[in-house]
Length: 128
Image: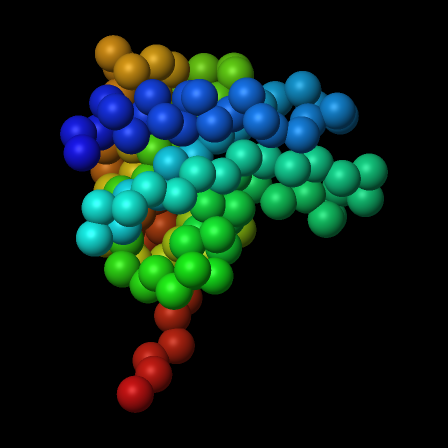
């Protein structure tokens, strides 16, 4: 799948965002190494700390289905280019420090960078 198509999926997904407070819709489309795509949206909550971002929603859906190997994530928003927040960067780093992160204000102005460029020296425990 090309990255423009992945971005279009994220852009479409953002329509399902639950954003009664910020009105800032975000959609994410996560591509696994096997070619499956999982989408996510931001879901706000009156207790702001309970809000979850689109990127983590997509990852949680994929992980809950047994996925562990990821290739790329595209992020689209209602307010132009949106980069992952710090919590999302760390969350993604746990699974794939080199995942391609695709952002842009639209599908014709995409920018791709590895997560490790957005979160250099992210925290990760070594496991057996």
